[in-house]
Image (tube, rainbow, N blue to C red):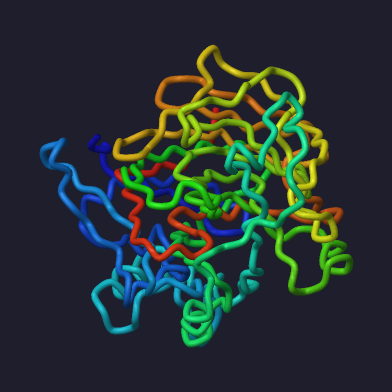
Length: 384
């Protein structure tokens, strides 16, 4: 579907409100909108293709392959400043004449990313998962990645990036477009995933869009140490080739929507307390059930349509926070899926403003298969 142009509004300051609309028609990355610091643009560049089903339309593909094994550190501070084009290029001139000067200043002051954990997988083989109304009892066997062998680990070490057996190819908005986590914003994305997913049994953890917020309370670092990183409070996931959505109440992650499972069956979605929840607290054992302060209200047809081999449009109304009842509302196309209310995200220190950090593109445990996430358009705007 062709988007209707590109709108970009911004103002100075950390509390700036922004609207982003990108239909990827230019055939190149708009650096004024997006920072590719966690994309290996040298070895696995973004590509742009004509959509044979839409005359005149074009989409962007973000590929995960072996070249992205080891992840990608976001070097947003000096001297690299990976959120801006190389100096001397036409893109750099355009960038600096737009949002570039402010973006470069904010990058230089930015705090480096902390590594986030992919956490537990909800889409697990049926013999490992009891699917009753409370998620039942999961086996205590930690999920193992069969592809993270010695050869893969050698590649990870040689990459000199995140040092983990992961693949990360994520774009994020430039920091000047950040907004406060408590201000309602609407995120809409039209995307497609590969039709063929070679591994649908090992529960390889796979994120395709995520929302975090920062800063969070300094108490977490004191409790868990500097190596710990918060999970996204909202994530669009694709484990085992199954589109599903999770929302986090601090260390309690809950799956609130899903497409059909690999065997064609559907989970049971009921109004009331969030029912499929697992802990991400470091000291808890793998797949440890938790109780979240989250209430869910479903539409009449809450099962998501799979994006495998087809375009789907997902819209999220996002309003996080813990001091009052926060709300995330999810639609697929024009269909209302679920409204989630409660405590969403992590604690912040008194008087602290925390902004949303949104990223999209593949982020997963390593798989030796090439997969692309195709994105037709993406829209971010203040919500009504």
